[in-house]
Image 1 (spheres, rainbow, N blue to C red):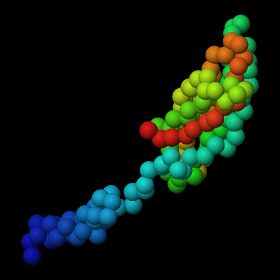
Image 2 (cartoon, rainbow, N blue to C red; image 1 turned 135 degrees about the vertical axis):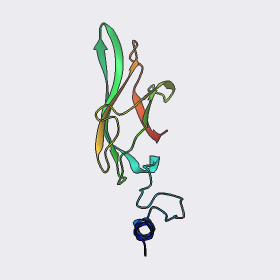
Image 3 (cartoon, rainbow, N blue to C red; image 1 turned 90 degrees about the vertical axis):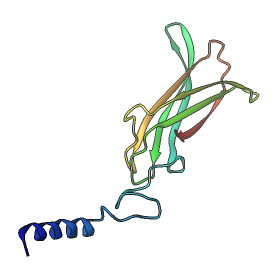
Length: 132
C-alpha cells in the first residue's frame, strides 16, 4: 500500500472512533450535556425590608438562588413581585443574579432587587425564577 492510502485509512479510522460522527436522539455533539432549565433553579433564601436611600424609601429583597443542574445556568431572571398588606400587587421588578451572573453548576449566586416605596405600603413579596 502506498503511504497516502495508509494515511487516509488512519485518518478515517480516527474520525470513525472519535464520536464526532455519532448522532444522538437529541442531535447533540457526543458528550454534550443538557442546558440548565427553570426547574433546576431554586430559591435558597430571601429577605425583604424597607430602607432609606438618599431620602427615598425603597423595599429591597436580597438572597441566594441555587442551581441543581450539572451545568452552569445562564440568562437567569429573578422577578420580585411586591404586595400590600391586603394582597394588592404594588409593583414588579426583574433582575439577574449579581455575583456571579451565571450560576455555577450545582452552585449559588447572590441577587438583590429594589422597588421605590415612599409610603411604605409594601408588606410582602414573591420571587419567581426563570431562564430566558
